[in-house]
Image (tube, rainbow, N blue to C red; front, side, top):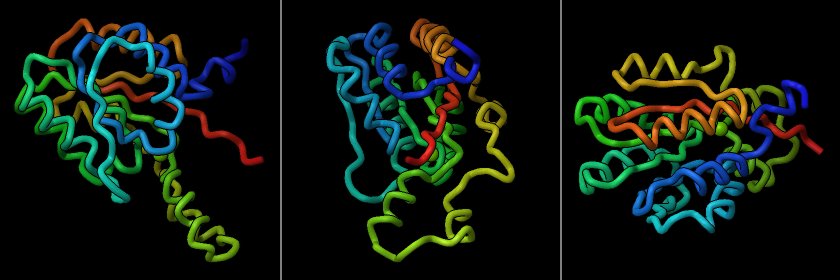
Length: 192
Ligand SMILES: [Mg+2]
């Protein structure tokens, strides 16, 4: 297996790790957006837990939802599965997690894209998008450094470049207490 193949080619690997390592009675805030489609079914054999979904078509609720859940239930592990684009809507929640010392493990699905908005763009039937249109839904130039962002707000963070990294970092997060962030580098599927 080469380096590229070892990358997190599919969020299913994240779900499999969660199934093995997630604590019983954990609370999951799911704003993984397009990545969540692979994670949710992969956790069907995980220990009993609560799963908080998006309430509607808007995005940006995931980080504050996990913060609120952790404050409401301080004796339960909270896991925030968080797409990168929607995390940017309410990123200041990381600072509140540090300030309140909430036991939240944030997993950022970094595909450097507002992938869900690309799907919505296709749904509105506005014809073939131009490069200028597509660039507005792309999260590069510059790439967002989630480890630096989290650490800048007082949340310890690590980057997972492959499934093995993620498994170890998630295991450490489940063992530990307090807020932490794992930036999972999720490979974008080539079109077609
Ligand atoms: Mg994304």
